[in-house]
Length: 451
Image 1: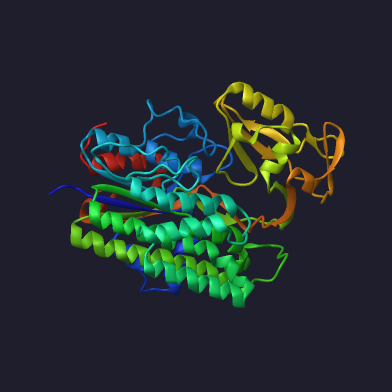
Image 2: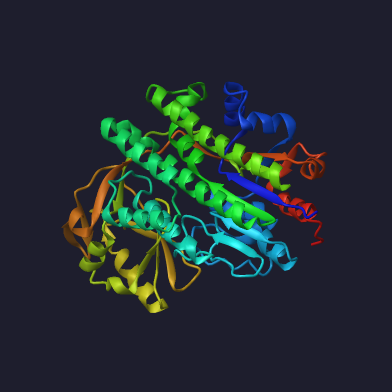
């Protein structure tokens, strides 16, 4: 019998929140995993400020960021020859794979051993395999780009992509009803907007499970970020004792939002446990790092809302540039030539505060056709900016201010790994704390592959 493995990537789940949930819900699927499987702590050795787009490559490549050098979303990944991700090893060894949303998995791989491949929600294009997944990815990328760090009104393009997904059955009737319920709740009480992001894992898992049941790859991954997002904002509401100075009172709705996010993951894990049992799979539930309390308050942030307007004022041809998905405070832009990017950088750096400090700085430019800017946000709300020493209202530059919830939880190197299945439990028998870069070799051993 062939070895078969599912990895459910529960982004940034720390030990503290896991223990809280299983104590709160002792009959949960996570509680069952802890009791009957192998329950491990993990640690990442990545250097510098931790981010999931760095820690997941460490998890799947067998080396940390001092070797793979992956530091940004949509950077040119140059380490694939020396440190390829685990699924490339598996493909070469004639093991079928199915990737669904794993960070830094773009571009999709087309190979007889690839059953399905949908890259992450920050992919620079909607390419996916098979082609039937592209409608969903188009909708998925649009949602992320429109709502990064701030909940915005639903627009026409999102509705159009959503309807296309219903028509090609990428989104089920059941998921559609959940969306309608969410819209209704938002209408009667605005606080439910805080939970809009919890729809994304419902929609994506529905499609993942459909493909898993149909294609049955021997190795498959599914990524979800919805718990991490809730923790960033609402750690204070669930663990107020972690804070010396509470700048606001704990909120019960926020606490319940974190619990609801865990309920969603727990239900999905239950479905995967059932599928695994019926189809001779083993299941790992993993986070590549965790979170812990951080004390900082909400701030006003400056951001580009309408980049076409910005380009127009800067006399840049909008058709020459493409904005790639990113997370605030980054903005990623690519073009088809080094000259275009040089010209873009020159003009973007001319947008300045009244004290002559540039609004942007170039953070990353390893690929000559692509640049990563970072906002240099001001603590003071400004109405005007300079461009080539001429004063403009920020709205004329396509720029606005918004409240940025800096959050009360932030990245920690310590995560978790839960496994179920006889082979997995034997594989981790001697482990209590595992360095995430060693997971790579564990997967090779699981499939009996010599590196």
